[in-house]
Length: 304
View: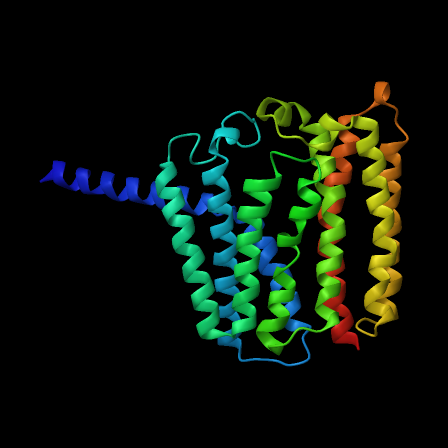
């Protein structure tokens, strides 16, 4: 009897470990960002919907993002095992079978799109389908192994969740939510190129053509700085179209100017004096910067 109890506990523990590994396939950190930006998009829309419908809809968007992450890990399992940043993911460590990851990702993709269509509307479900398809087929399968511009173009998929949040509430697409898209789209390159600077050895092992490997460190730093400068006109668009007020504009410019500074600080160090910590500072601040920009949207809506 004791042995049966222990056996049952062991089975339960193994099932829990496997479910945890499946959850890790979905890239929880990315999912948390999706929840946040999608919620901001929903709350800043001109129309409101019931709380339960909002929660369920955001849930399906998050599941869709997780599905894309799982399919990304399925396809890139051969690369993940070569990189220190990704070698401990569920498939390289053998915690999840690659075929199971594929089935899991496809199942979640269907569930999320169909669920969002049923509980929300066709437009939101269509945008979610485009997000998943773009991330998997355009970024993961087509671009990532072929061009250093992979994250520039591929960033479109990560920029869509707040737009989906808006359409969940409004069931329409105007220029206001497009500003969310533009902010994330033009923020993405500097964020990921900063990461690629201090993870260049990883990308070299996996033969992924990131900008530091194809164009060199100095060219990458120039591009990071240029994209940080592009954020200045981009961040002014919400104010210019009347979507955000003066508070948003002033604080957003202050945050962006500091982003410009940390990127310039990285640029001014020549290759022989390059410090990894400056690239890490750009990467870390870029996350904080994007978070604060979206918090500003909410604060501006409340104040106005």
